[in-house]
Length: 509
Image (cartoon, rainbow, N blue to C red; front, side):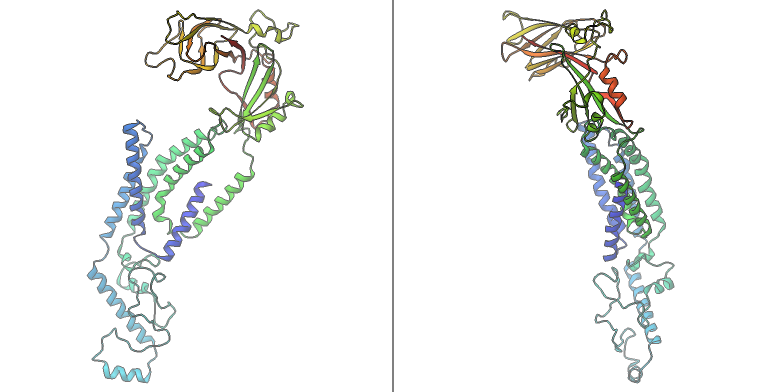
């Protein structure tokens, strides 16, 4: 749709400009402006590659080279134009021939015959004093630069004896100028157009076309991930313009049937995009599932994150959310600012239960939530050698998981994990501190022993959480199994973060 709209609008504007002021140099002018733009783009890409080591603009080199060669051919083409002396001679001969035709086709009058007899030896051939109602008020009204519609007047082709200059071109030259372009353009070779068109079309289609297809395939699902719509459409529009811009020097010569067909394509695709449903079983909408469990109170909350209004239609079809208060708000402002999150009280999971606990136990899962995470903290004395004013030792163990987190209400400025992998090239904590610490283990049932330090206040509050991904059967996460059964075929479920279920406990140091 975007490509067809660009082609039709560009044809409409260029065709109108050609009708007002036709010129045989329009192709050279367009290539000259394209060359200037490609040079600026090449400079920008060179700076990015040299300073920021961004090498994705390599195709601009070939793009610039193709435009340069096409412009060079336009300059070479001008060498075939007639010289000034030859053109003046041609215009003079054509004018005399036209005057002779006018005299031969106009019926003579008695006064005219007498005047011709008296002054036949004293007047020049181009001086014709016989005037009538169609005689031009301007002397030498024959156009020699631009078309008859711009800045000059010509007699119509149907006037008495005023035949078009094309007959003179056919008599004195092997071809005639295109449309109302300058007469000397009849000497320009037309074979160079094909070579220019190949240079300007093959390179963009082969290089930029492949990049555009790759970018479209990579970005068309990122809107469901919360990416900006403007970024996607801007990327497609920029690459689309780069692909179609080389057609500008030739667009004004297209017959009206071609742009009319392109306009029909634009209308058809526009109607389809406005009326067709956005998703299908082969192109599904992603919604993100997360179930949070407060291990202290036993309250569990299920949430789905996705695009509105499709998300509300999905949530309305889930049985456990029917009849319950569903709260919908903006998504994560940092990761998914354009998405909506809907949450409601869900079915209790059992993914974090100890391995010696049976799912067939008559006790509800809430009675075993406290065993999902084991947490202990010891505040360090002031005599402890730390780069911060306050510190604490924390021991954390999650059941049946290798992934846990610690969320701090205020930033910490020092972290040291016993036995943890370190990279000396990167600081463990930035200068302004951090409020979130993600812990990963290579083995099961391994506790994390770490030391944290901070400078703001003597105490430190926050919460510890662990993530679970292994479902362990349909009974492990019944809320997820229910959502998968109720979700429509044009949507699919993914996980919001590192886990499907997150259990957490509050702590105070």
